[in-house]
Amino acid sequence: MNWFEVLLYQPSVAHSVLLLSFVIAVGLILSHLHIKNISFGVTWILFVGILVGQLGLQLDSEISHFAKEFGLILFIYSIGIEVGPGFFQSFKKGGVLLNLLALAIVLLGCGIMVLILRLTGENPASMIGVLYGAVTNTPGLGAAQQTFSDINAGAANPLYAQGYAVAYPLAVVGIILSITFLKTFFRVDKAAEDSLFEANADRNGANLQRQNEQRTAAQSAPQAVDNKPHLFFIFLGIALGVVLGMVPLTIPGIPVPIRLGLAGGPLIVSILISHFGPRIHIPTHTTKSANLMIREIGISLFMAAVGIGAGQGFIQTILGGGYMWVVYGFIITVVPCLVVGLIARYCCHLSYYTIAGLISGAHTDPPALAYSNSLCSDQQASIAYSTVYPLTMFMRVLLAQVLVIIL
Image 1 (cartoon, helix red, strand yellow):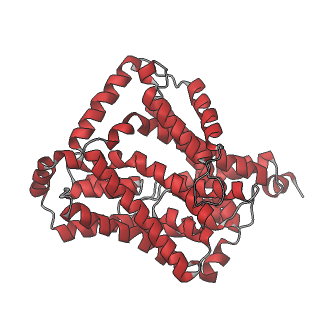
Image 2: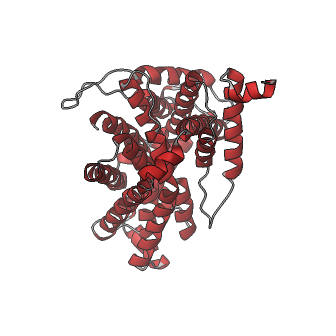
Image 3: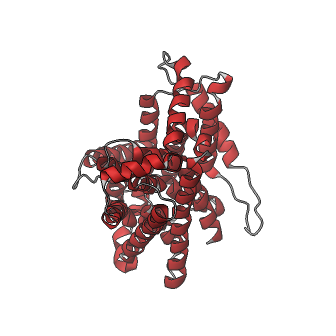
């Protein structure tokens, strides 16, 4: 066996770095593809990883586990840094209504998944993966996998990632189709929607967003000249988040203690640090470019490691009945969007553009937000998206762990 075959097939640090880098590079190239303004973004890394794994190339198990978990931590932490400044503010005034509606989408999706699970007898791991693919929420997938690993002495289950990968593509389309259907059903008129938005400014979150922008600008102003990322507080926050994530929490009715895990712990700490840091003069500021770099590196490592691990036997799983996961995922995606969309319109009198942003934020789905923004000339969709995003992300991560433990 020559040196290249050794590098390609024998597990080692060099082999793992080569495999991860190749999968990430190819996935990022494909992420620029758009089909009618719809892009799967970095999820292409997952698909490329699955293909590589199906071809028989695998990572060293320890390196794979580290890349997946550390990538998830970096990704989650960067999200917390971004949403933290407005997290608590999002529960005031109109934010309460928008967050309750988003929470209804989250819980309804979980309920439909459990119902399908009971009716079909599918494997719980695959259905939890389908759920998080159907709601396009990668941190929830990571939280579910990490919780399963904790409960089962470090073991991994590829069904989570396989279910996610099967459900994800149609989910992106399904969210946008739901928003489009509601536009037709409501017979949207731009002028009428603008009037409705202004008439119910608090409910639609407009005043809340203005307060958030003023508050964030005021917090950031003293640090405007500081363009360096404060790595000390980033890694201190990650360390504290890992400690917090490992603390066992006993909840009545749940047979084993629940942990926030390597997803939930860093998320909470990053939210708290970014929210309260400027108030107590702690230099926690991270530039947008630095935060984006951390996030992209984290999600790329996570997607590549998960994809390669899930690729082994992927096609066999689909041919063995996994094709039905596409149908289940589409139901989980569309039904909550339509039900809550109708409630938001006819019971809460929200504008269509607010509803579109609400649905996008409840699924933490940037492609859907981009589509929603293309429908309106101002920031109505973005206001709703940014208002519900923090709580939705937190609940997705927390519920993933609860579902794994219960099911």
